[in-house]
Amino acid sequence: METKVTWFGHATLGLQTAGYSILIDPFFSGNPAATEKADHVKADFILITHGHSDHVGDSISIAKRTNALVIANFEISNWLGNKGLKNTHAQHIGGGFQHPFGYLKLTTALHGSSLPDGSNGGNPAGFLITTNQNKKIYFAGDTGLFGDMRLIGEEGIDLAVLPIGDNYTMGPADALRAVKLIQPKHVIPIHFNTWPLIAQDVNGWAKTVQAETDSLVHILQPGGSFVL
Ligand code: NI
Ligand code: MN
Image 1 (cartoon, rainbow, N blue to C red):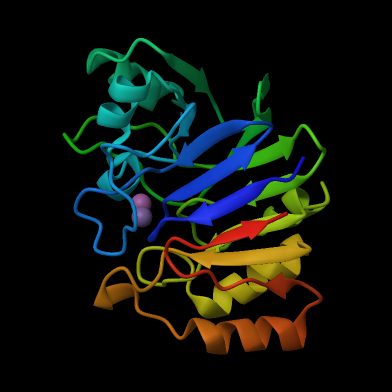
Image 2 (image 1 turned 60 degrees about the horizontal axis):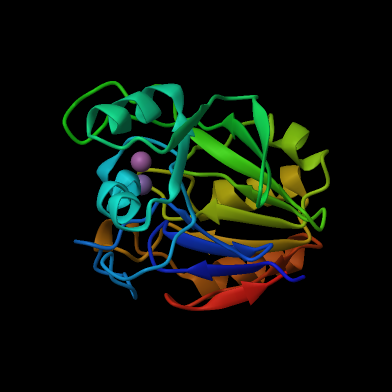
């Protein structure tokens, strides 16, 4: 069975695998790039990388409507519990767990994680998902470049989803270095062009990555999908 990754704009992603719909960082309301609406999007699971409002987004309302299981670090899970969500699963960096959709491990990310009301959101994370068909997908989350991306690459990454927007995260030059460390088969750039502050020439970036690495870049339009 195939795994489909859909980019809903900014850092909001959908993953369809093993018959489940998984939302990552579901930010629809107030997201100028969003191609979906929070009040009818499907979700069996919701994964949150860190506490910032453009990543927690509509998680609470979607989880209440769908009863999706929300997976995040311990601090964010507790915060969601205090907001009335019962169906949460806390993990933390370095820890993996076999969920119905695949094995999910939290990875390091260099960033902040304060929650929308100022609460402590713990440390930010990325996600390494091994699907039930043994495909490995690395969602870096919001992060700067770090050398241990090489260790993540050693796992054999089929698809890496990386921020390239600069200012808040890696920009194009460091995202290129990230591709060289991770050596994924496929790459999808995200977290750019949502606002003028993170506008990037994604086509130029893709050309450079194609020229300097063996990874295949897939430029999605918001709403577009890639099948792995
Ligand atoms: Ni952030
Ligand atoms: Mn962000």
